Length: 57
Image (cartoon, rainbow, N blue to C red; front, side, top):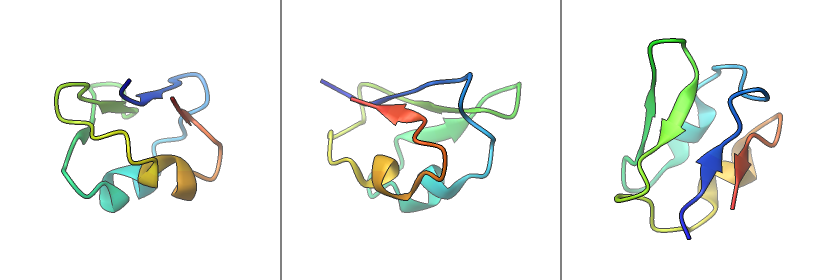
Protein backbone atom coordinates (compact mmCIF):
# COMPACT_ATOMS: atom_id res chain seq x y z
CA UNK A 1 0.00 0.00 0.00
CA UNK A 2 1.49 3.32 -1.06
CA UNK A 3 1.61 6.36 1.18
CA UNK A 4 -0.73 9.28 0.52
CA UNK A 5 -0.44 12.89 1.64
CA UNK A 6 -3.27 14.44 3.60
CA UNK A 7 -3.78 17.69 1.67
CA UNK A 8 -5.51 19.31 4.66
CA UNK A 9 -2.34 18.87 6.72
CA UNK A 10 0.28 19.54 4.02
CA UNK A 11 1.97 22.94 4.40
CA UNK A 12 3.89 22.69 1.12
CA UNK A 13 7.37 22.72 2.69
CA UNK A 14 8.82 20.10 0.30
CA UNK A 15 10.74 18.06 2.86
CA UNK A 16 8.94 14.90 1.79
CA UNK A 17 9.85 15.42 -1.86
CA UNK A 18 13.50 15.99 -0.98
CA UNK A 19 13.61 12.83 1.15
CA UNK A 20 11.85 10.43 -1.24
CA UNK A 21 14.49 7.99 -2.57
CA UNK A 22 12.54 7.16 -5.74
CA UNK A 23 11.17 10.57 -6.72
CA UNK A 24 7.53 9.55 -6.21
CA UNK A 25 6.50 12.90 -4.70
CA UNK A 26 5.65 16.05 -6.62
CA UNK A 27 3.92 19.36 -5.99
CA UNK A 28 0.44 19.93 -7.41
CA UNK A 29 -1.18 23.10 -8.76
CA UNK A 30 -2.25 24.12 -5.22
CA UNK A 31 1.30 24.01 -3.85
CA UNK A 32 0.56 20.83 -1.91
CA UNK A 33 2.45 17.60 -2.38
CA UNK A 34 1.18 14.32 -3.77
CA UNK A 35 2.59 10.81 -3.98
CA UNK A 36 2.42 8.78 -7.17
CA UNK A 37 1.18 5.38 -5.94
CA UNK A 38 2.75 3.62 -8.92
CA UNK A 39 6.21 4.87 -7.94
CA UNK A 40 5.94 4.78 -4.12
CA UNK A 41 7.91 1.92 -2.54
CA UNK A 42 6.19 2.33 0.85
CA UNK A 43 9.47 3.04 2.65
CA UNK A 44 8.08 5.73 4.96
CA UNK A 45 10.94 8.18 4.45
CA UNK A 46 8.46 10.99 3.72
CA UNK A 47 6.50 10.30 6.89
CA UNK A 48 9.68 10.36 8.93
CA UNK A 49 10.59 13.91 7.94
CA UNK A 50 7.20 15.62 7.60
CA UNK A 51 6.78 18.29 10.31
CA UNK A 52 2.97 17.98 10.25
CA UNK A 53 2.55 14.20 9.73
CA UNK A 54 0.77 14.63 6.39
CA UNK A 55 1.99 11.40 4.72
CA UNK A 56 -0.17 8.45 5.78
CA UNK A 57 0.12 4.76 5.01
